Amino acid sequence: MTREKDWLLTLANVILIFAEIAFVFALIAVVVGGIAMLTFAHGKVLADLAAAGAPQGAFWALIAVLALVWAMLSLSMLFVRRLRAIVGTVNEGDPFLPDNAVRLARMAWYALGTQLCEFVGQPLIAAYGQYASGFTRGLSTSGGQHVSLAPLGFAITLFILARVFRQGAAMRDDLEGTV
Image (tube, rainbow, N blue to C red):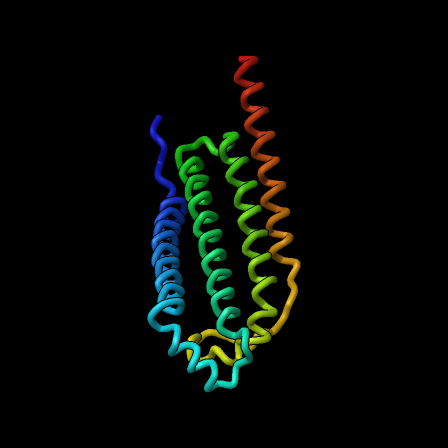
């Protein structure tokens, strides 16, 4: 019996591939920007910050925000990579695998890590974002501190799904053992 291709899973896989590629380019851009700020553009960045009236620690706050952005992009890319692997098992017709339970649990940790990075970065952006407007064209630097329970709910949902998949895989194994 041949399986019919599911257009939704194919579309999801294509979108996830493009997302993974976009994350790679974004990660490279952040690393190149950080290296530039720490080396040959260091003096210009310090001069621009001084001209904007930035306090003493603004440069290192900007570097810290770049590091947090890099961490968030990395976690997001890992999330997409795990989701793509799950989509692949669904497309093959066998999603209730122990590996998918592990993937879902990791995705929950990545989501929590991303939220933690945002939570840590918000005060930095609130304190120093106004001085970085020349570096962040088109990005919000208002630094509006907000706390949302949605990412926490999302992570809990993923942890629960991981347990559902773990139990589904165990039940399938038990069923195969009795047949």
